[in-house]
Image 1 (cartoon, one colour):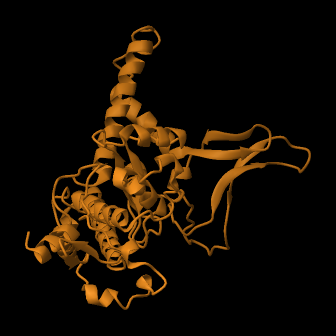
Image 2 (cartoon, helix red, strand yellow; image 1 turned 45 degrees about the vertical axis):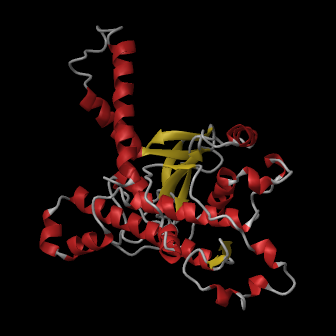
Amino acid sequence: KGSPIYYASVSLKNKLYREYEDIKESIFKKYPSKFDIEKYTYDLFIWAFVMLLSRAARLSSKSTGEELALVPYADLMNHSPYSNTYIDAQRSGLPFVSRTEEVALYSDRNYKKFEQVFINYGEKSNADLLLLYGFALEKNPFNSVDISVGLSKDDPLYNQKKIYLDKAGRGAQSVRFPLQLDRYPSELVDFLRLLLVEPEDLGLTTIDRIDFNEPISPSLERRVLTTMISICESYLTQYPTTVQEDELLIADKTLFSALSRQQRMAVKLRISEKRILQQTIKAVEEELLRLPAIVVDDQKITPAGRSFETLDTQKSLSQNQNLNTWVDIRVPKVKDVKAVNSDNKPSIAERRRKRRTGE
């Protein structure tokens, strides 16, 4: 539990059960002479779904265009994110004569005798691989953790923001963004700027005239970054174990080998997700350090522990810039954003700020 994949798997299981019930009511019971409910069971329905999922492949047919086909034995080919080998259709027989098509495996390189040939299932995270195919990889360049954020209905600018999002073709309730070990999407920052912008940030302008791809104010940038930290922390609190506990479990070869294969895969998945979340927090805190200081009640405060004096020598506060542009009298607060599995626990940056100010 704790991993987004847990909720995705429960959702998929419920969806499959509802689909089976719909088929049973609309077809099996309507045509009992053709479909014996005693034979067409839910277990058989799940088996059929697994067969379809594991053997289906999109083929570029020369005669009918792209089509979805069941390819027996395709599930025997293991996945590698680094492989460029793929399955596709090709004409069989004599060129320009035969119209018969067959499935072919196109290799990305020469293989030695008895060497395993891998194919690529696509750019999938470990969560996707575990949910759809039952395994996770030790090294996966496409591994990620999805976080979800949405527009709060308590937002005083809710109507304006919803109209803006509707025009942009993006829902207001919940949008998912993938976090990876070495980066987070700039689209997440842009979206949080919109969610967290307040009337004071707008001045005399309106939301539809603002470019959220660029920083709007120092105060808003702090709210965006501290919100990202809070979201990651809220996800981390949902896991029943810490990274250190998972590392000890994996290091204990006797105990770890006693787990089932599925359990071992789940442990590896959750530790990789927690590392991504922790690395994101670290990266965002470093971004906070690059922001200028703020002034609260005549006290100079930095958002993540750096002294104000060091800021005087930073290039971000060059002599060509007005210092007032980078000084904000409002303490940044995390609000107006909903995260999946979120709680009210203050962020690391917020706790540090309170310790410095004695709150």
